[in-house]
Image (tube, rainbow, N blue to C red):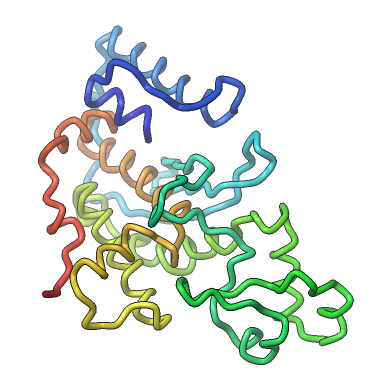
Amino acid sequence: MEADIGFAVDAMALKCGGGSNTERLIKYARIVELMGLAAKGFKITRPLEGDLKIADVSATEVATNAGIPTVGVTVRLENGVSFHGATPLGTSAGTDEAIHLVDSTIEKCPATEKYPELFDFDADNKTYKFKKEVTSDVVAGKHDEELSELWRRALRYGGKGCLNAVENVEKHIAPLFVGKTLGEVGSLVDVDKQLLALERKLAVERGKLPENAEKDQQIAVMQRKANLGMNAILSCSLALGRLVAAREGVELPDILRQMEGNIDRDALYSVDGK
């Protein structure tokens, strides 16, 4: 996405990290691809028909050079055409940044209620993690399949797997779009509004956000993306953004260029509150 945004706004440079990082190289390659298309004067001459339907939205873990995965999303149309998006790995170092959801972060569930002695509770985020002293033998001794699955996921990639974020795409996000025609998908802003509204809805359902929360509190939750995961939301936004662009007969940077300076923050988050 950084490459498409940078190209869209005619940025003089793009800082993506070290050249040895695979995901950084992908961004640089995308810039080269876009520059090549621009130099040729390439234009899409046959936009996708608006009555085509989205047949599937699927997600997988995608390997990165860091040895831990991120989320990749593929949106497939009924005619077989597909659009892909994957979120770069990592969480920003600042406070209140968007959350790259990993499997060692556990939501409240029957296992956390049944075995409180095995978990530490994060009061700020209202999530759980296995205590450091918990071992495989302790978990196996409980003879509980749900607990064992939580433990297995918490061990994968040192706790940094993202199967939960993958499942969030397929369980929560996919139903928003599968079966819709391209015309019904709306604009990229419409797509992002739906994704952010779903993040807020999950936060309320999980008891992390009061239904009558102040506007700034609601926006903060949507910016953090800790329920669906930044890696789930942004990968879907990128894949669907490419779909929207193809429907309009343009490349994604063309859509982003049109949006530059024209996004109403309040409309994007579309929250009610004082």
